[in-house]
Image (cartoon, rainbow, N blue to C red; front, side, top):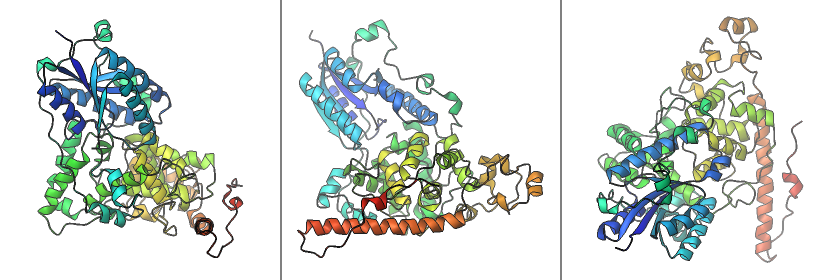
Length: 533
């Protein structure tokens, strides 16, 4: 009897069995010809990436739990997850040959690294005579289609984006694949015969190299937990219908929002399923809140940034990024380290950064506060530095959303009201006047009364001793004076915007063939970074 061909689904993001069209395609093809095909769903654990990826312990744990849950879901379908260790360029030539692969499917990705990787895998597949089928299912709308419908460029404003997508049909979630039969189980290859456990999902010890950095496991990874959180989030329909992001609390002791973002990031939860279920609820409540502040609005922000990022390979950096203002940020390693580790001397800012390090998640408005503080508000440090820290620590780190939000909050792109600066004192007081959030995450200040816990520098030395926390000894002095530096930084932003306008006007004059009146543009020296004195 001739050996069967193997159908392979390659999991990358989209770590789920529900609404996974590329996985369903493989299952359906196998079910249509059980005597011809066997099935291997795989995840490539790239050993090279493990060495240089900027990923903290909490996110590695989330991934490990997600892969374990995915394996359990696949076993319910009479399959399993095959975790293949190695780089895609070394893994695929081997399995194409050893497994007699005839079809490879996967979910598309917009990230530049992924696009280059996929192009190489497609080349290898072509050489091996393997058909490749890729499906767009990580977003509600296909970013390429949105760009096409907008005349070939990404919409630059949220409202423009909404006007484009409201004319597009939303693809419905596909059904979970039908259970396979025993006939679809593949024979063991040479590696499995030597080690039957060689393709098992990784252990926590394999992925987490610094276990001492693991915090409380508040948000377990996996499709099962993602779907449970979706059900819980949508169960209170009145809350869903009235949801407005600005009215939620950035410093509540427990999340005031859904915390579905990590599950969307890894694809444990389908954005299309979330959208479908949400729209069902909203139809029953005609007077619901509207985008951009509504729960639907939050989903569409994700779509907005994905579309913009799909059109700009340099989306995660300032230079060479068509969307991004060129701003002469400064470098200050001491200030960056203080911000990163929650030692700025501003308790609200420090509490947020410590929560991020401990739990891997912070409220979106808390991200607003610390991002503004690092960049245009107080420290005048590049948003790219903050992006790197978030890239390491956030469970929901997402290339498009992380970069897009940092550009927005630093007033580098998409948002330009740079004179609106978050106060590192007043903003937190609005929703936590007593300072309970600070006491939880900055326990040194636990005995400070509500009247000065946001501004401990206003306490006398004798009061500080009474409270058991002396500034400069038990908790740092504030590294900048917000009341002074934020005004200076507004002036800097005004100057930077002026230079960017002049440069743009100069380019426009060049493009019109010199017909327009030329304005003298600012020299590149005007944008040169100067060291802080």
